[in-house]
Amino acid sequence: MQLSMWTYPWDIQDLGFEAVERDLRERAGLNMISLSASYHAGRFLQPRSPRRKAYFPEDGTIYFQPTPSRWAGLAIQPKVADVIAEGGDVLDDLVRRREAGGLGVSCWTVCLHNTRLGMLHPQAVTRNAFGDANYYNLCPSHADARAYVRTLVEDLSRTYRPDRIELESPSFMGFAHEYHHEKDGVGLTPEDEFLLSLCFCPSCLARAASAGVDGEAARRLVRQWITETCERAVPQRRFPDFPARGLDSFAPWPQLHAYLLWRFEPVTSFVAELREVADPATKVVIIDLKEGWLGGCDLAALGKVCDGAILCAYDMPGDDVAGLVQAGRAALGADKFFGIGYRLFYPEMAGPEILAAKVKPALAPAVDGLNFYNYGLVPAARLDWVGKALSA
Image (cartoon, rainbow, N blue to C red):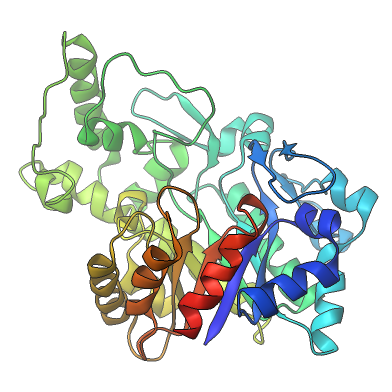
């Protein structure tokens, strides 16, 4: 079983390779590290760093040294984060240590969640039914966005040869909780947030039209519904059984329903391209949630075009984790990698017994790996919780 922990490069720079490897191996009982290879902005409390207690990573940068010839002529270009340019290539060092018997190496790779690049290339971002840009989300239908991530994955896998690449956000992102300091005075319902998340950019409309789907008709209906939402004094559920009922909620509106079914295509074909360009020796898997369909992820279809998936069991009790394991394996099939991801944050993980109860259902033959979030963001004592949960 592959047992890994999501980790940022600055954690390793602050604490040192030996200390991090010792923590992951001896305290947490892990055999792999999932290092961030590209990431977005944030503000992180660093409880164990001897250098700082708060860190603001650069937005939309990469954490490895790109090969210039691979990127020549592309409209969207990468930026190497200052912590790598100034502090050294952490990924390269990890791969060298792996060759000497160290931890396995996985590249945790944020794909389309990139506000810095969205601001620089607004033509390549998703747009709602009113044409407003979602600058934090490059669109999986746009050729330049696809080319950027294709080259990212190709360069990572063929230059560094990691054991695995974990694709985060290769899809359409939600309207809520994807940008900073968000304001909503209306009181959006779940269906309102979903409708505002739908992309009707020119690339999506053209791609849908080529598949025989009338995205323009779907856009007009969504625009009408959002307008009505904004005119109400207080929120009102249009679809009280959404999202539990899934896309069937929209079946009475055939053109919208067809568009919603179509939006799986750009994500699936995009992930297929990423698997095709990656080095054959590197496994390519997606990171997703149980409700990944909201962002255009069809787990069964994605399982056919890549090497598997890590499904995050965040905020799930143990009984629900057992259901996630069953559903995930059934969707992916028997021959694909299937992992479960856990978050070590308090109060979600209020004690070692809670973590152990949530991990237990995933210590089953149907599961090939576990990932834990996140090395540098939690107190060291929680690494011991992981070790106890796995040894049990």
